[in-house]
Length: 243
Image (tube, rainbow, N blue to C red; front, side):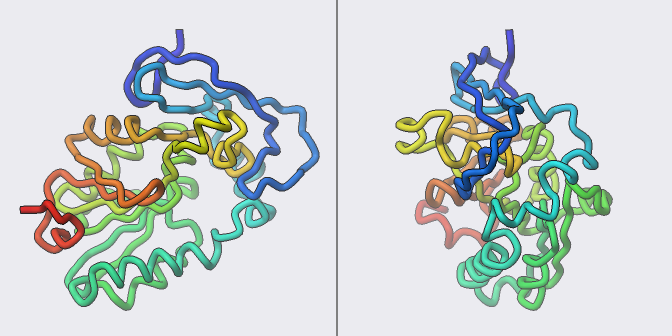
């Protein structure tokens, strides 16, 4: 019996798709490589074990290669710029007193965009094995944009995020299952092995994952979420019910 990577309960087969299935829904030639997804019977987490044994080199060759931008058009410019603007607009001048770690920093573009507005900014990317000592420090804000869905071990990532933001907040994005997901099932656009989307969260799965590390999570919408052990004073404006 297979166990859920989030809550440990039993899973069942959810469906399978060709490796070529991608977020831009481009009609790529089928590879014949079938990727099987499972769904947890309790928290609803959907995931595949297809990539669990892959190392960084294989991911670089098969997923995060020169063609990756074709399947994630916002990766290079649009997402880093928009996320930096969101952070600056939300926190304003108070950012100048804050330290920030971007987890899953990729090309480093988001850190470049936000650095002029914060006291200190650094980037760590688990897929390129960048400076792991950055994870030993504590930050006011940890960002993690479009990363958790790529994690073959999502709880390891969430433990890292919680430790780095033990006295701060984690601002992260990953699209949770919604009404469109319920209607489309395995054909939902966000289930995309060619993009490296191996972990598809329900709201219950996301809440359970953060609860396991002593955090709460509040969702701004289906994609944007904030996790925290307690709400630090600088972040209280995000929560209308904050003390």
